[in-house]
Image (cartoon, rainbow, N blue to C red):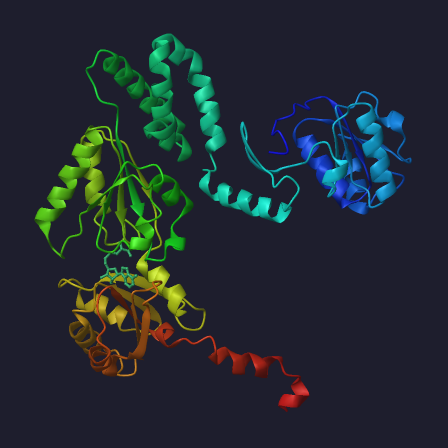
Length: 473
Ligand code: SAH
């Protein structure tokens, strides 16, 4: 380790920045954000630094650097493009024991600026010790994705409750209590923006902690109802990823891709609760399992393909949890229709082709004649979920409702997964083509003008439109 990472308090302290360009501006901005009193020394300023100086909040000395500018400074930054000046700043600062950073020159620097993630009061600093700043920035981006946006709010929330908790709990009980708060229902609430709910959850945790002290209660569990998206793990939301990293137990369906499960905490218990269509008993079993695990104090991720509220029975599971006062959060996922549309390049709406879209469950006998007439309009896009087994019936109903034989359709099998297949056809031909190509679930059927959309077709049209008028004539 060539550097000691420390956090320097520069609040209301003088810091010197030598240089008049955009790099100097960037450094000055970071220092100002940390509350430093910044003095910029440069005979001339670039336009953006001049504009920043004009806005106030920092001092500009329009002169060449002299060592006495360092008087009283708690740190100095050299950001000029003149190596002689940078080196003079470095020498003068070191002679006075003022920490100095020379931009892009680790040898002349006594400290370096890390890449930072600011979730104040939580700060994360990443450095490559000057070896590969690009790499440090990439690491920063990766960590950024893992840290909830409201992490700072959580830190402040916990800070505000410290005195109260110190009063309520003995010293030995506090640490495990805060661990639970940081990883459980309280944190989940704050991170979801619900501070009132968080205070209620904290009261319950505090109550439980006192009872645990007497051996009487288990800690509170909670449930995360998470949409896992259509299959490609990179299509998980950041919040889904964060909660998957924290859950103790994961209940997952048949539609949840193994690649998605791999993103969960390594030591989390994984329970497959996949069910066949219309298996009511299994749904009861899932409800009972969710409730039991949460009451045992577990953080349970209920992972569902796509979005939990699109043909996912998510609403029924929430009713069960709410009835027993078990805390939960719902995390949306990219539903199969959106994943398939993007992957197969079928825009669900398009100014020329379709103005509305309906998501329909393809099994069951639902839908009035009027509804099917609406579905049969090619300027309306319909996405049938669970429709493969019912393909012939769907085709027949659309035709009976007035849809043309050439009404465009597309079938997308295993959308967003490596095995994805796209079949484009027409109402008249699709049943035979699907049988021939052995289309299997999970697959979606999309009907309407957009199903025949091909971006490549626009090439000719755009080329003609952008050609000079006389060339067309
Ligand atoms: N809640 C899920 C849908 C569950 S119903 C969602 O929002 O996506 C199950 C149906 O979704 C399947 O029968 C199929 O029609 C569709 N489906 C789910 N994942 C799919 C995928 N990767 N490719 C194509 N269809 C998919």
